[in-house]
Image 1: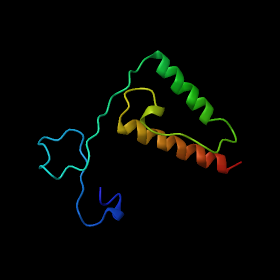
Image 2 (image 1 turned 90 degrees about the vertical axis):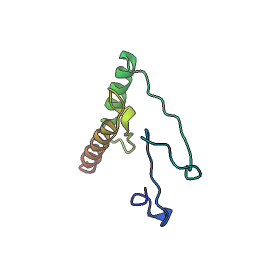
Image 3 (image 1 turned 180 degrees about the vertical axis):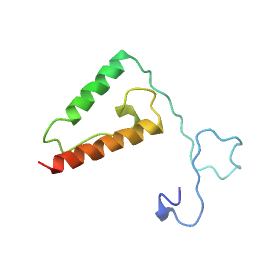
Image 4 (image 1 turned 45 degrees about the horizontal axis):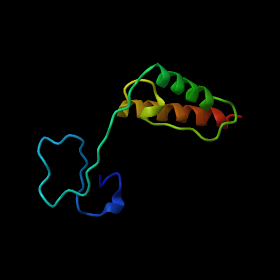
Length: 95
């Protein structure tokens, strides 16, 4: 994480979701629990509504992240929605 957040300093900090070995005792900063959402037709319709809203002319605020794309919310979905936002921002600057 040090390259992403240089203000952390010189102590190396790593993040993992599923370590092969437990971190050494005394080195763990925090532990979080993650849950996956249930993907269903209602979710798909909501994501479609969000996309239609975000593509409206004159919009100046957009949302991105894995939950803004229909399907299993993974990092790739987060990246693809950030590329959508990039395109929408570029298109909004033309008007």
